[in-house]
Image 1 (cartoon, rainbow, N blue to C red):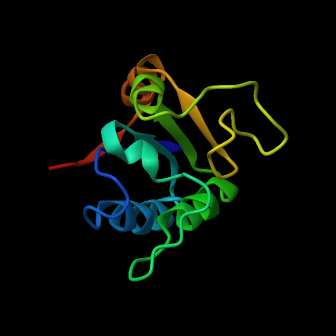
Image 2: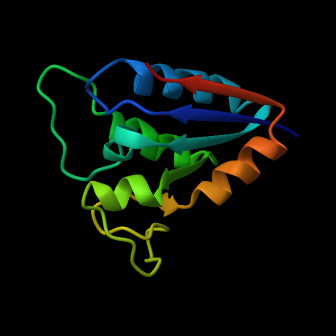
Length: 126
């Protein structure tokens, strides 16, 4: 199976990139293994408890993608700089208590592996 990797850098409500990534990933999952890497302010996307008034809750969209088999990782250095703590992996399949299920904090080394193994790469950033 071919692999698509999507790299996001914007926070969830700064642009529509998170929503665009979800739509791309949803369609691609029919033919591709999908990886999503959250970098810079995009590490805020999977934060639990967000309830935006006028926007789609992108965290919920990302949970659905993880449930369908997408691999979603957040940069460890970016997450730490923004107050997210890496812990032991829990029953929800994540390693950060502040994150929604199925999304893990990882290293740039994993991003490097994702890119190396990818047939296609999409970067959504400003």
